[in-house]
Length: 311
Length: 322
Image (tube, rainbow over all chains, first blue to last red; front, side, top):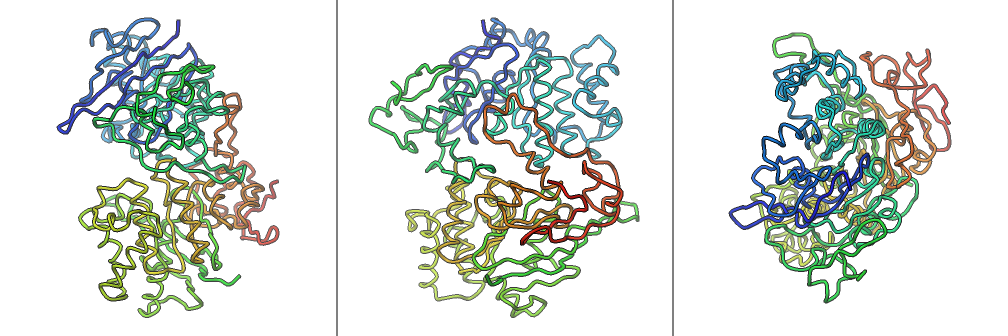
């Protein structure tokens, strides 16, 4: 049995102009200790997927599908049970741009205390906070500081420390390196690599496939609300199946090889009342008549691909 | 090759107060005596982290802010306070900003946005201007140009908007375009498209670029020469392949270490970045990179000069790394 399995998850937002199909039939699974990278461009539903797993959707609802954690459904569970046993204790999240939402009028220490109090932590507060601060490579002096006294990289580490405070086994990190400088970005990745080695499972949501390769054993590529390809990272990097995955990989310029980056023509689709058929139809170099119908999930060596080419 | 733009000893310090009520002042040396030149038809990359002074350099060249000292020569004419030279510079040297959502006025039609520089510089009649705008739109491959002409910015995607910004820069037929992080806000799949377009225009019209970025991979694709900036100083300059494949300054080395390539083998590899945690040292004393440098020696308390370290290559470091 997998540690986490997501089955045909559909999350929607109702708006005045119609229903936004942000996550539309996403499935994947993860074994204990494994990490997954969710790749895709802006507005492909990757953050909504993360928020669905955390049950932290604002204005959105999971309309169908299921999320199983150790075989137990966290969708069907009551809100109070999820909060009591799972939220922050089993699954936690580093939200996108979280480092900018530290409260400016309280010290870092105070903000750590708040989390522990909220979750009725019974152990020694100061000891736990000191432990976690060291594990993200900071020293205790940051605790007495206010957020404005810290650099971006330090704030990001603090937000990661907060997510780890109650010892969860699974952390969702939504764009944890965007808006950081190149060097700081690399340090945050090294930190995540270290935490992963210590047994943490990470779900890394990012548009940067290079960063995913540092952390994830599995990759899910999302496009227009669908997970169009899922598999092991070695399969996805070495033998990408879906034309979108291929295009995305070819569009990354390389520092070491002097190859010309390619691009994908056209624009990503809107998720508001999307039409039938493959979402990538307009931009796909291999589009055929059949693609106007929804493509089936076709099994690959380590996962699946949603594309008529492999029927 | 002839030089189209050259910058000598450009300096700009900003003075900030430490608190609202305190009288003590803090000086930020945003750009501190930098010199470089841009050859005709070349792409010169200015790379570095945020706060290294890249964007300030761009603004100083265009005289959007006054430099404290230093000179800028454009087409062999010194750009000073004389408005005649300044007008020429501002017509022939255009800038592309980072954020295509903020760089264009949402209430103006695409046609008006691109036509504005022509009106400011009083080029052509109404009919001629219209044709120039259509030409510029076709140049950046926004088709059908006649349809885009009457649209508003909100109807376009990020990549299309950035091409509008490029069209606006092109319409005055500039010799130099300063591109300040032109693709960092765009989705990965459309980045290459904008870069390729910039490269085509360079070849077709002989436009020279100053490409400002923190992304060394796109820099290598587009550029011929590169200068690495750190806290207002240029620490290394040279032909791009040589600098990025055989860096001579520890800071360049750290920047290259930090880059991940999409490679599944990375998973089992330890990621080493050869850099120390910054200490709260006075960064303007001696070598500015000293407190983060893993190779720092006693001598680094003096400021290292930008010396020649190879053919066309300069580096400001006392330690010779290899």
